[in-house]
Length: 194
Image (tube, rainbow, N blue to C red):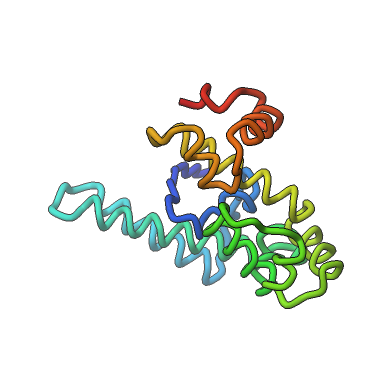
């Protein structure tokens, strides 16, 4: 028997953007008889029981249990990953890179350079660049640009902020340079994200 569980989570806190950019498109969780599987099954049974009868607080309880399930599934994915040097497992095991990614996500508007990011990681510029590429899969400046533009697309589609304000909030001083970079990466002008 196969049970397929689908769900969606919206992570608004910029600290959680790391999950969005570093998790694979699909995380497959095998049903096993180990302790982790038993805990996930118990959470699912609790969600199922809660949804059977409508009671006050049901939505909040189901939401928290679903979050616990998601976090447990992500942790199990990371722990069981055969390739612990790359992607989310590598990032989570590397405090220097994890710290730098957190800074980028919390402050995309800052004038980050490879040198300043390396300094934040307490690494030499070259060691940082090599380690970042190993863990994240792309060069630091490329990751920064992609993150800024994806963040801008999110802001353009979910807020009424003017394009120049969005550009500044993600680290672009000039609206024209922002628009050029945005169009090059996204394939459309910023105004088309509204």
